[in-house]
Image (tube, rainbow, N blue to C red):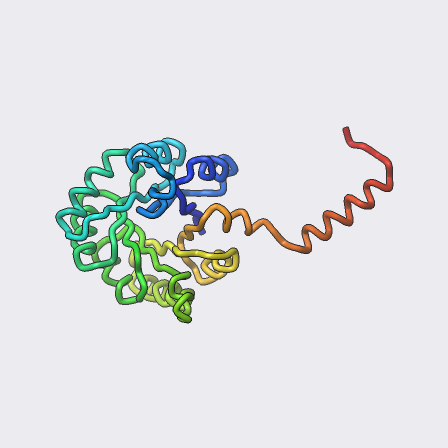
Length: 217
């Protein structure tokens, strides 16, 4: 499973990218606002740092506006993925932009039917929102599984990009179900390395080592 990091914080992206932990980046208007920077400026910096897809989101609500904004965003770098919402206008924009040879990430997916439409429209990525479904006492992972089955049934090439990930367990479950990509905040990716038994074992090793009175350097 590919890892994308969901942030516009260039320092966090650089750390994870230098470790080889990420394959791409996703941003959205909320993350751009949090960064406090110009969308084109920060997106260009991210694209220069990361070789994989970098999602930049349109903000128009009509298809013509999304297409125009998508074309403008695509000028930033060759690895830009244009992000559009899963609305009827978003699907129209997806079809046009995909036919022009651009990568498109269709976001805010909450049903298998929506994902099926996005694949038919040629989306490069479909972004089902796991955490937001869980907030409603619905099973976000069940949606990932349904989409996986449908896409495999018909050999759709659209990649399932598990989004709205809130925990390390979400990452594990998305991998088990077969999501192609998971995008998560930097803190969630870091949390995947943590385990209480690792900490406990390391403490025991360090206590025993101290008793030997030895040094390696």
